[in-house]
Amino acid sequence: MAIDIRARITFEGKQPLSDSAAGRAASFFIQDPGNPSVDPRILTNSARAQEAAGYDSSLVWQFGASPDVWSVTSWALSATDQLRVVAAHRPGVQSPTAAARTLATLDRLSGGRQQIHIIQGRTDIDIARDGDFLEHDSRYRRAAEYVTILKKELFATEPFDFDGEFYRVSGAMSGVQPSQTPHPTIHAAGNSDAGLDFVTDHADVWAVGALGLAEHEKQIQRVRTLAASKDRTLGFWSGAFNVILGDTDEQAWDFTRQISQEVIAFLERSGDKIADWEQRVAGSARAHTPARTIPAEAFDLDDDSRYRLEGPLYTRLSALTGHGPSLVGTPDSIADYLADYYLIGIDVITLGGIPELFDENGDELLDPHHRQLRKELVAQLRARAGRIDRERNAEVAA
Image 1 (cartoon, rainbow, N blue to C red):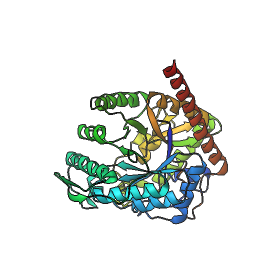
Image 2 (cartoon, rainbow, N blue to C red):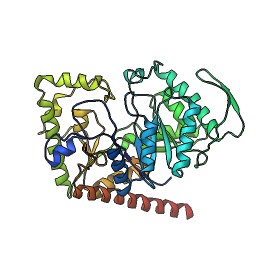
Image 3 (cartoon, rainbow, N blue to C red):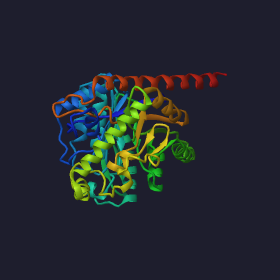
Image 4 (cartoon, rainbow, N blue to C red):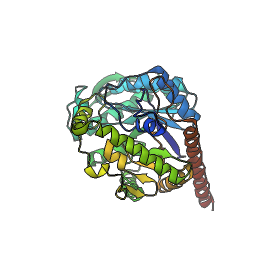
């Protein structure tokens, strides 16, 4: 498959940590926790800005207190012409037949731009908000039944029955079918044995849980082998990257240091209440992970060695805030680094952070110059992937 450069839809405003470029950028990584809301201006502007920047697709996330994923997805699709939208979706929230009809309807209305990402929920606390108390492996068994029924419902021309451990349907059939064949792309995550069994049986694209190029390659080889044993082929998605750009690598790293200083200052303003802040985040509706301990060394900006892993890959902001790894550099240097991911089989690459900065009025917090750098990064990565595709095709033709 051709490269898919992905963003994440945002629908709530950020609160800048200070009135500076670094303070605005830092608001992506940390701010006071609160209940997720949804603003039509932010949602519309987010989707349109991502399409204008050249992104191929965007993810709409789902958690136990977040706005309805299908409503957000449909709004983003209606605001754009080409952007594909991937709805994170957790079995157990909706019946599989109803989800299939929703998926098919949105795909039909958008001209084949709807996709789905099957998730299991990151914490028991979060999924319990929706009355889901299944244990880990049982959730994957349920998901297997769920996707089986969903696929049947998408294209069944005759009524069908299903009688399983978790679901039973009688005479199921949909009056709407998706535009895409054989079906809208199904993404899925999971690193456990149960998760990988589910992914290699039912998904089209696996969200790789790894850090660094070598670990990505190792995980891809493992899952490719498992999928091949079932006569299946998967695509691969690296979905955690958040990008910090500059005109030179030195400028980008200096900007990253300023962002880190803003984050640290935010935490230190709480004094001895940092642990309380972590607990509030863990207990808030916005929280996606349980409370964690911030390592003391993450506050020491004089020592970057433990956090600069390879090339532009940087993890200090991950240690401070729990977000995924950062990529720091120019559009060229980051595109060069990510081209190696495409070479080993990563088809879908998320370039996050920079497309998710909007204030409460719906205006982008990213300044015009950094917006141009964002557009250049997308273009540079696409150009490198295109060269790789042409070289591969030439090798096959030879």
